[in-house]
Image 1 (spheres, rainbow, N blue to C red):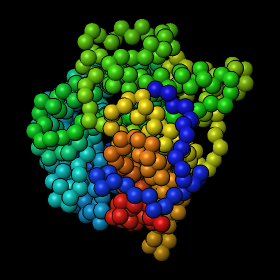
Image 2 (image 1 turned 90 degrees about the horizontal axis):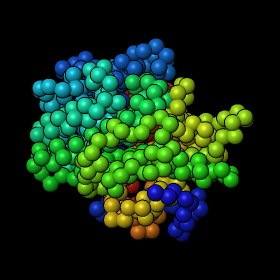
Image 3 (image 1 turned 135 degrees about the vertical axis):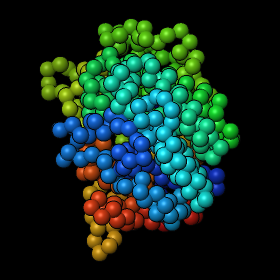
Length: 480
């Protein structure tokens, strides 16, 4: 897949268009993840996950924050569902906590956990909101990590068993099933750089995790298709790296990062093969003998659409080996590398403006990505499953005015509209995130929500961006 800069459609060059209309069938909503919002980590029979262990390890998360309480969504389910309805959400993407279903990652299901998600799905349907369930958003049961986690092939088979359990329980009501959220993060940040749980810095383990996550996707799709009884859709969500360059060595750097970050997942999932250049780039680490006969056929399962997560771009070149290596790849640097075999690529500091995560704001990158995916995989529908921004929001007089986030969303919805005008089969857009929440290694220091959460009182306050999104949904039109 080539992610070169593509021509854009007509409109304001800054992507600040208004009045653009989306098709009636275009689904607009928001998204969350279980560990980031649920809390109640030791209630209802839930077992520990790798993020419980990681966040309770000193020095791993900013300010020592944990997801123990988070947004207390577990106890505030009904009021949060009412909040979604008040915003007019057409769809809500949530994740199911594997350790709430199987506390040890295998064995008999936990009835209380299944009941919680059953109430969630029923509550969404009662309010006319389309349920989009993600099976894995990074909270691997700790018991499975103790056996090697995603570097262990057996974890993929345990995932399929878990998928079948949830498929039996919710498979008459969930509209869309997503197997994995951002397996790049699970593999490379969890097992390569150490920035995410489980915090390992092992290049070989990271590449093994890539394959076993891909395998889990395929096995999970098969398990769902065997158990789901309604006319559901199936998908996976990938966080694509839109990689650019400004140097003679940039094409080689772009190729390497594209292979690791993008084609290492789209290759097996969508075409049934790993890219030859990825295997060559990583040959000093592994011969990929953990890919067994028949695996690629299992991974390459038909899906109804591909979930696309996008936040920013990256600019790369090959490091000269003598200057101070720039490492502005947008991910928390704790010493390890999320780029096994390509540690000699450097990521350059990009021009602003930036979000509070330090990520550059580049709506043209979203249009570029959507058009490139459409060209590389014609006939495959796309859905933006995450896009949003963190800014330093404050409550004043009971209100949260966040014009930067409104501007960010306006520009990225404009990019999505332009992609549709270019012929991209884009079916929906889910804003990240519904609520301010536990932002992984950054704890509660970063706010992505369109709804502000006071973590002391759990008071929810709809931000100006939330009201803006509600207006957009009501008219299927970017507000003036």
